[in-house]
Image (cartoon, rainbow, N blue to C red; front, side, top):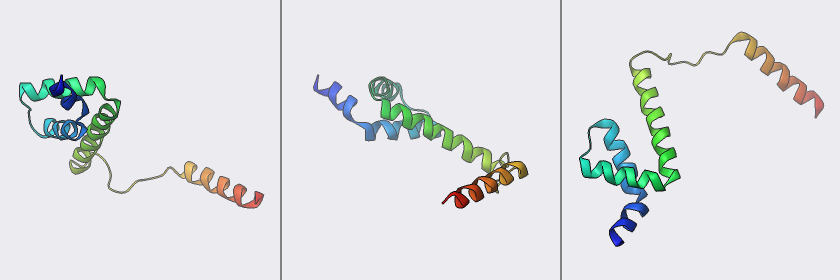
Length: 91
């Protein structure tokens, strides 16, 4: 029972395995350890999703699939400017 508690309570180990899995493969026992932990820990499940999204975005950015400079639509800029002016006038 003590070893199960160690696996369940070790978020640091789980985040390490999440990152290791994204960079390389993990051993079968590490996969089981991570799966068990993720089944019981919503914080690490969220971390896994966010980490995957960040890594995918960085790979896309490096590959040139995402522009380096964010570009705002002209209509969006105009609407935002009008909202700011309206808010300033109401104060």
